[in-house]
Image (cartoon, rainbow, N blue to C red):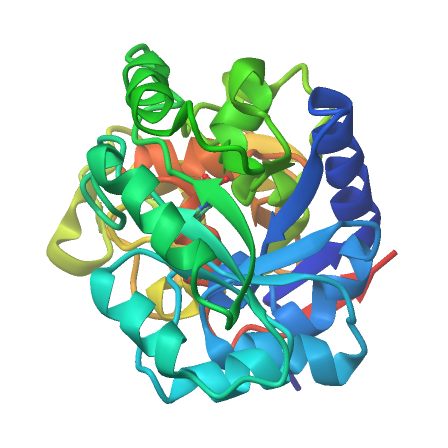
Length: 357
Ligand SMILES: *Cc1c(COP(=O)(O)O)cnc(C)c1O
């Protein structure tokens, strides 16, 4: 007798979203970013929905091996690079492409025993100040890499900090241009936001993640409403109990919600231990029996409460959508002060997952 909660994943939506990416960047190859277990969807479950991609980008070595053993022979990019010199044997064995972002990695490459040259992504820090070489070093590092026989093709890579916002990418693009204009090599700069909104950054390869799963890089559902993107994950459950409140009654831990009049509320089998955000306040949107309503009170570990005033027919067994086809994950995330990225990648292990066409 399982709890009624489940996450349903649509492989059709995933395929559709890859087509949306291709329509936006028709001249670029596509790295489908599947890090963090495919943003919580389960890499093993969904990678075949992305078989039309040109490559998979991730950062966990185990995930790369999973793809190879599952039968993916195409490119795989390690976005964070390799973590120790010993890793290079495996990088070479599995035919992985790796980011190179620090000086020690050049020494490691030059000393590595490899079965075939390793393709590398030369990561330039154009302003994010996370990973990468200073743009002023780009030419020198590129020349050093070219002189290492263990290194195969070299692609220039950078990552944008604000491609989804008003600041945009021009400052970072200028730095890339200043540092790398003399380098003749393929380029890969664009995350999801730049794939959708900054075609001047598309170049040879784009690297979208979040839009493949149908959520917005900006966190605002409106921003992707007309792109044709479809949500891949739908998190659903059911009403498992109903309570009738009198005026003044309080709901849940710390009694954070207090009824202003008599009302019916429903108890949903979904809590923060399923991955629903505990910070979602009263008023977070939720769908009960196809009707928009709101959560009430503090989210518990295994349950949350909802207002049944807009849906008087709702009763025990009525379906509930936490996010997905009818309710953008971005809307739930916004109410909880986070992004769809965090919610989907935090889907808990205990939630049963169904894959649909
Ligand atoms: C996660 C990541 C991406 C994808 O970002 P989205 O915003 O999900 O498109 C691209 N490049 C790098 C280096 C990343 O770490």
